[in-house]
Image (tube, rainbow, N blue to C red; front, side):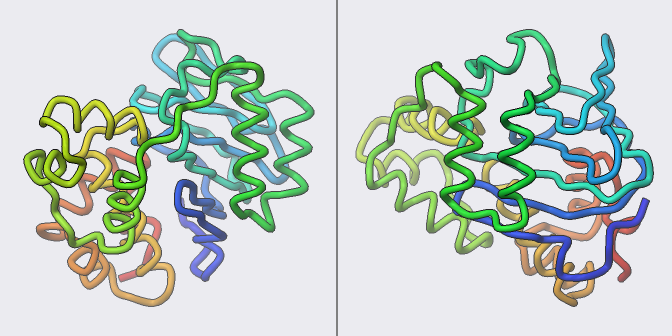
Length: 241
């Protein structure tokens, strides 16, 4: 299980999505922190949950559900869609299923747009996923500004009291607004941003030790546990120290 050791590990990103190009055989059991789309470049991708197995050229996987992936030793893409704050409302995904195969129309959008991924492509993919469903409502400018700051500086550690103060609402309301926007708790979101930063740093030449500390992890063991629980593979099997 070895990802390509070049810059294409991080293919592209926007403020609310990231695309990784990889080459591996399979993963261990894990839970995604955000919804994702898996796209095989040569063959189908297989996603196994504890109750079922789904196989397809492009597979949507919901967040926070235990599963493992068999890529079949091929090059593939993984697209993490942070903007899908309520993935259970997607008409293309069963409300009970962990994973679902995507339709031909969306596969064509992915095939034409994944290599030049940008905000417009992300918008079209999300529109195809949501279909006629209600789009997540836009949040206040203050929350958007706060998310930009957290994404820009992974060392920032914002607690619940500071979040409420930043948004000018009481704590419970602030936490609900944050999860409605991101689909994650405040803590999980900050961990996800740290993971994104560590992957980018390691992809561009930093050692694993430097990457994990620069991304805000307590120590290498904490980084390794978090990485494996989120992706189903160890960082040591992906990056050379």
